[in-house]
Length: 111
Ligand SMILES: [Zn+2]
Image (tube, rainbow, N blue to C red; front, side):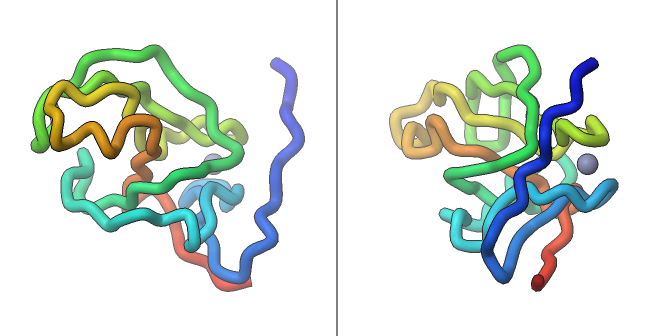
């Protein structure tokens, strides 16, 4: 397996993988804080780094059925959340293309 070089975010306040502390998202990328994570609350963000994406699948979330793909840390392979690909409900479409990171899988860090 080839190891991709890690991306380091330049921001002062970032979220990193709770397992290996690789940078995942800037605090500024957060669009909203949501309560529909698999393991509790999460953050809806418009940009992530150092993550890989699994197979797309249909999953029924509290907000309805969505086509999503799990995302994982590309350094330690811990699952971090998922990418919203297509929502079936019109009112959930604003999430399409956005990333959901679970609060329990990331830690907030001030650099
Ligand atoms: Zn990690």
